[in-house]
Length: 588
Image 1 (spheres, rainbow, N blue to C red):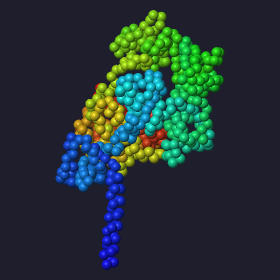
Image 2 (cartoon, rainbow, N blue to C red):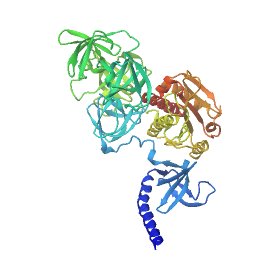
Image 3 (cartoon, rainbow, N blue to C red):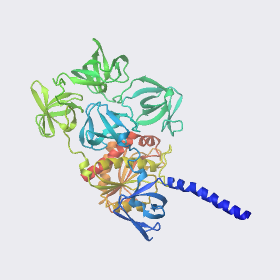
Image 4 (cartoon, rainbow, N blue to C red):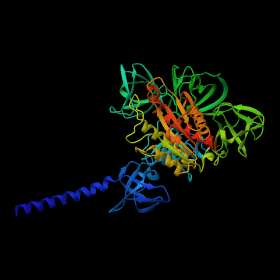
């Protein structure tokens, strides 16, 4: 009787535990996959020789039960499971944009810049589709590196994150454009990867070292020294000035005498005795104050303010109106162009073959008389006119600015496979400061993915999260997709700690060399790292690939300085842009 009672007690106990275990298991199955092919076999085992249990269609999503080598076990129904090939599905929980996507109702952004260009993709090489004027509000959609996707005036496009202010629950951090200079007060101050004492230590700074503060978060400040970024505790910083959004120019140019007026756009702006951040502060001007500009040097203006006081101020905080053009905005119905590059050509006609009548300076403004094709006819004053290319200027009062097709035209509809090297148990190279190659390649790949996707390319990642993918599977993805180009991303390492730079590898001189060459050229332009050139490489993903393929080494993690560089958001933006540009040049 006692045994019978014990048996019943154990049974009830097991049933009770099972009732709690079951829900926990289903909750754990939060990872999902989406089918990428029109019709995919679901098999009884993790092999192509296993029997087919069912067929699933493109776009269907299933919970992940288990993973084994290159296969994923999915949940077909409450009591049915089966195996699918990992290279034919996408893991939905970690799709390239999911890490930064926010629903359109979760926040807005406000333009901080006059004539902010609104582009079709996250990069300056994408075509301009409109202007996001200063003070206007747009719906925040997504973020990719240093770019934000917005919905504005019925269009969706991208703007530079540094020129917008976020409102509401956008869940993004946009570094302030206004930087400050500071010096270190501690004898030795740790620089960390994240704003926390638990953050990985990436270096240290000695007392009195000068740094640029990019943004502040609580008691922490993100600083930049020689292009390297990291976080330090604000208690150990002594701020020396209000700073600027640009580095002090390393080269000088002749000053230009001008007649102009301007309005201060910063809340409080230091006036200095010379045109550099090292100049002594001799006064201040405040937002909205009118000043007279008498001289320009680099990006600095010599101004007259408060009747007879003079000094130099950072030009990017002054909204300037050039008196000599006779084109100062006086009515809201007029349209103007603003020069954004020093030495911009103004020609006698609407063509690059026409003679140059004038070279305009940065910041000058001219009234638009009419639009002629892709050109603006402008008023130069004294009854003189000229023509300026619409795609090299900013405009105000123009609802549909002149644009030229961006580089996206060359990759549109092209099928491209991006292969983030390593993953899962294969970490790849490990940097001197602990950087894992597998994480860095995935970061770069997602930024490249966003750019290519925005350009209309059919782009695929061999992995979209920290998953191990075999070399055979990476190549099979290329073949299955019938890719026109395959790019494998890696970061280098060697016992020689001084080794640095980028390399593009090819296997077949006929099939791969041209792609590698184009990628190398554009990477060098964007990354500013040492050019190690293009080299022959007997790598599996190149050797076994039937399509044009290249393997890129994007910097050395074994080099302490270069490891810091490649981890910065600025480098990631530039290197992903270089890869994108290389592909556009290859297909062009």
